[in-house]
Image (cartoon, rainbow, N blue to C red; front, side):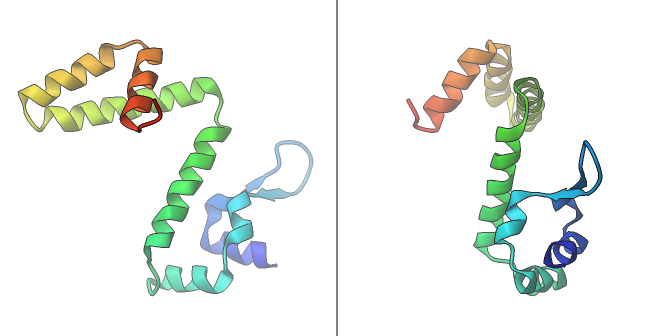
Amino acid sequence: MRLEKLASLHPEIRRKRTAGKGVVYHISAATMSLDDERNRAKGEAFTLNDSDRQLSLWVQLYRNMSPASRAQLMEQALRLVKDDLMSQGPNVSELAVQIMKLPEDERKRLCEKLNGKV
């Protein structure tokens, strides 16, 4: 019953099973508090924790994607970043164009380097 109530507040955590009957719920529903979600739905509770949870959900979704879907998502994100950077001026836009021209493995290395993993 708790999961159904949470799903009424957050329909994205519930989906039909691909095989057979029934529904499945996203793993993030296990850590959700019904009272907190009700308050958030009313607009009373928005904290930094909520944005951390949202980021965590995005990371989980990304990890569960197929490699082809990940590549498509990264391409789209890079295009959007390029467009944003292009609106900031010619020097930044040229850098964005150069980044988009890099092969995928080099872009990954660049991202890891920027994130301090290398």
